[in-house]
Image (cartoon, rainbow, N blue to C red):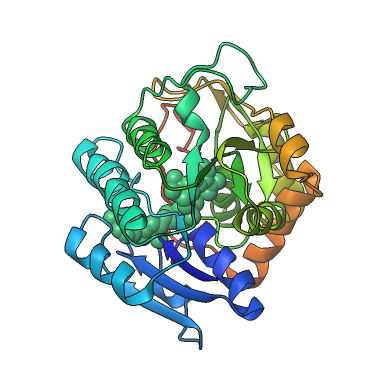
Length: 321
Ligand SMILES: NC(=O)c1ccc[n+]([C@@H]2O[C@H](COP(=O)([O-])OP(=O)(O)OC[C@H]3O[C@@H](n4cnc5c(N)ncnc54)[C@H](O)[C@@H]3O)[C@@H](O)[C@H]2O)c1
């Protein structure tokens, strides 16, 4: 396959590329390195990396014409400043339109879109079924959902995967790297009082293998279906690092741009794609922490405003959706 991975220098894209290159797929990456890092993609046979933005229509057309991808994994997304609506709209809507139209024009067989679970907004029911109405209310969620809608109406075979928090090598958003970094440095933390589901990177990559090679189209939830509190993560990180706490960690209410519980119901995905996650919550968190032990952590990004702790001693801990 000839796979164009937009945002390939990011966490999910680079993990996919690491798996797919040795299988003989040709890979082309376009990334502006806004949150990704070129160093994670050292030059290798079978891979071309171009620095650029998916918003640049002429560049995108040129990339499609030169590379002629059979498949596109559209992983590029802007999210790092919740107040920069225009950048979110440019990358997540206009950039996605460029991907959709070029894919149509150049005969791409399938687009795989990586969608945020924040498309569901404040859900009426948890775990959230994939049929739940979408009602995003943040710049990231709104723009990503508009992008998904354009792809689904493009006429190109599209699979949109609405993802739980995928957790593994190079994860640089959310509570896991934040707690790891802060606790290791002897700094204080707090936990937002929210529930999320966490999916191991290896389980995500296994699903992507099925999706890229299969014939499914449409929208799927990708998760374990199991909710865990941010405090559950904190406890695993404390245990992993062997930290002794003087006082219990403060728990703060979710911020105004946050959702108390996001747990996705993956039953359609399990039924139709024959995929079942293999790793438990604790194994997933511990595997990521072991990766940080070996490789360290990088800068941490978030699409959320930092919640305000109740306790003056609390120090912001960011998380992701
Ligand atoms: N990681 C998760 O758990 C998760 C959950 C839900 C959805 N997603 C989606 O999965 C995709 C990948 O997420 P990730 O966790 O790897 O994030 P990431 O920030 O590591 O990767 C995103 C990549 O896109 C690049 N990028 C940003 N704007 C760009 C632009 N205009 N042109 C080209 N490249 C651009 C960034 O530099 C980065 O390399 C995103 O679309 C995100 O919305 C991820």
